[in-house]
Length: 239
Image (cartoon, rainbow, N blue to C red; front, side):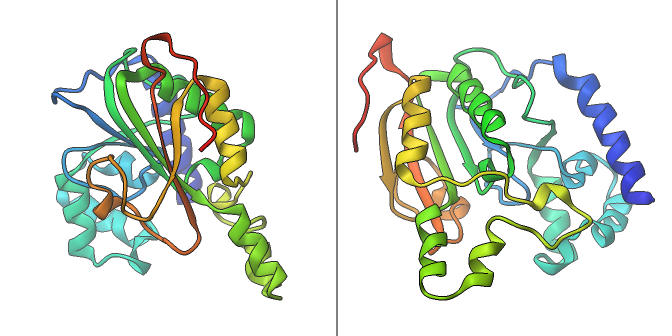
C-alpha cells in the first residue's frame, strides 16, 4: 500500500513538472538519463525512481527511505545518503518531452535503461536527446547486448537467457526488459534520427567524461557513442 501511494504521488509530481524547463548552470552540461544511483560528480541525473523523488528531503527522512528503497542490497546506508545528498537529481518521467532547451547539453549518458522502455518510447527518448544536444555533443549508451543474451542460450544457460526478456519481480514493473538491441539494431535507430559517428566502444573507453565511474557490467553490455548531426551533415556511419 505504501509503495502504491508513493508511486501515485511521484506520478502526480512528475506530471505537474513536465512543462518546467531546467537550465544547466555548468559550461558543458552532462546529463545522465535513467541514472538510478549510478552517478558521477557534476552530472544532472534524471530518473523517475523513489530515490530521485526523495533526494531533496531532509536527512532524517532519507534514512527511512533507505529501508524501503531496495538499495540495501547494493549500498550501505551512509553510501546511499552520500549519493543522494551530493548529487543533483531531477525526478522526471523521460517518456515525456525532456525538460531541457534545444542545443543545451554537451554530453548525455544512459546505461541499462533503454531496454526498460518499449521501442517507440526509446526512439522518442533518443530523438529528444538529439534535440537537446549541442552541435558538438555526444551521447553514450550502454544496453544489455542481445548477442550476449543469445550466446547464453547457445551455451545451454537458458534461465539466464530468459532473464533478459522476462522478470520474476512481481512488485516492480519497471525492472522488466521491454526490448533488446545488438549494435546494428541500435545503430540503425540512431542513424535514422540523425546521429553520426556511431561507434561501438570498449568498457570505460570513449570520449564521454567519467565513464570510469559510470560504465558497469562490462561482460554483458554493448557500449556505443554517437555525435550530434554536425552542421546539417547527414552522413551515416557504418562502423
